[in-house]
Image (tube, rainbow, N blue to C red; front, side):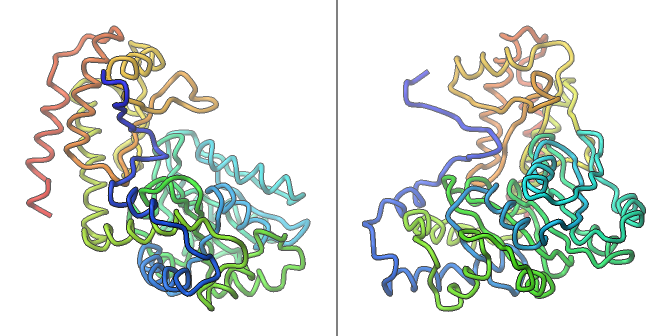
Length: 387
């Protein structure tokens, strides 16, 4: 292995395109000058397209978790009552944030590795008429589950006026997102996943219905007060010092997405998911999720006859290939492969080839090339020339 050669296949942070790296290396500019306002004017309409909204998408210097906290502190009044749908470790993070603010939480937990059922959520919500917000995770990174967010709002609104607040950190930008059409009130994501940037930016969009709640909330915090960001973004500026280098990179990342076309971006992610899943099926290694619930951006693999952590160590040592382990109750039981952002089918074929060698060295009896061949067949059937 070459000393500086690394292959990053974790579900964030993800690899950064060379043109984005070059953009971030531009000389610094004044954050209150016309150049920064021009930059924000360039970014704003393209972020709206990615979110599927007519609302401005606010850009805040912070991690994805800062976006989850911003959603809580702005949209839920002190001593409020909420429902949190937990399908993994990041759904549970919403619970922790709400409890830190003294909010009463009703937790609806789904077996890890499965998506929630919107109609079951609807029935559960009938028991709690005082709930003012329902929190859900679009892609549950810890399990590789894609939840049916597109069906959630309509189910909830039949029985409640609660806001629909969604963590889209590990998928927005890589999968179809229609915030307005689906009735999502607040959508949050971060820069270090499908947006192909380093960590450090959080993006959040708020519906008009949710803005009414935000403005009526007497305790919105200080730095995360979304009303400040909305007011300043209308003037093409920010209330606090922005991460300018990341904004340079964001402008270029959005240019790459526009050039490829969002439908093609989403199709590429679906194709990579199918290649990875078919490869592990061919190798007879179980996947944590079923096909219907599987994420387009991260795949969780649940080995039965070899050690997941030993496998991760082997491929890291042999090739500099990083995949993620399990979290919390799944620690040591699964490994997770990120396939989002600056990642292509060619990268997946290379990754699978390295992983097959790692599987043999970790004690798994496989026929070399079997997984790669299965992924190749998926590519030939559904790949670039057919999209």
